Amino acid sequence: MRKIRRLQPHRERAAAAAWLALAVGCGNPSPQLAKDAVTQADTAAQAETSGPQAETSDVNNDAAQADEGQADSPIPDTAQGDAPQFDAAQSETAQPDTAGVDAAEGDAVAGDVAAAEVAQDTADAAAPDTVACTGPTCVGAPFPTWQLVDFQPKSPGFQKSYGLSTFLGKVTVVGLYAAT
Amino acid sequence: MQQVLAKEGKAVHMVAVNDSYAAGAQGNFVAKAAFPLFQDTTETTAWTLHGGGKDDIIIYGKDGKLAVFLPYSGPVSTHMATPEGWANVKGAIEKVWAKP
View 1 (cartoon, rainbow over the protein chains, first blue to last red):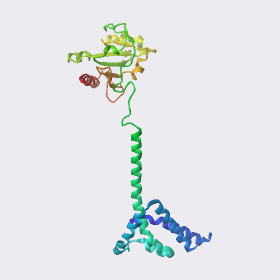
View 2 (view 1 turned 180 degrees about the horizontal axis):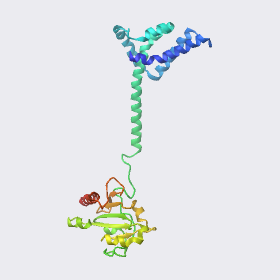
View 3 (view 1 turned 120 degrees about the horizontal axis):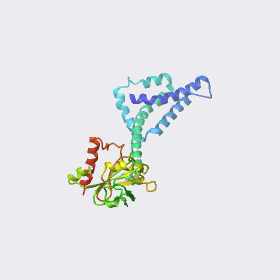
């Protein structure tokens, strides 16, 4: 029942538009026009969302739903009262539309997921798993090459200019400080 | 810290690179440390070559490759005047030292 209610608005809008045009005398509307409008709306909805298999499964479900009774469904009553001309067509197509949309929603979701997976695969293929770190602060970066004067009188290299390569072979801790 | 580590049998080198704009205060620095102190210059820009800033600590492995970069404002406190910062830096050094 919920599914049917979800689809009904587009049909009602189409019918209402056609009948409104008839009531105010715009153009040359007719009951057939209203029926055509609903049919077009259905066609558009189905084109967007459903496939042949979904329609088939809906038809199969018709009998079961009829057995269960449709007294709780507002759709047939409303349609019959407002627009008897397209009631028959509606009763034929309303349930297929509903299931068609549901099936198509599932398809759409599956399609979205598939598209996302493809996009992800593409991204994975284009980019490495991890972004390579190549800066001087990256793990594995070699000693920077510089030569500076050591101004520590207690150091063996006092007043000499040398660089970090001198310290190869032992863990070397470099602090960047500013004497104050 | 270097002496503490040495007593534990973990010999490491420690050096400091003084900011190129702090050359006039070298004397204050000398009194606080016993390890090599390098004076950076605007020509060499060692700080830039290290990719770091003031009070950052960089630990290189025995192979001369960077093992740990500890930015001063990073998630790990490296404020050497605090027990936590001191312990953090010491622990980081020890981990690198333990690597083959």
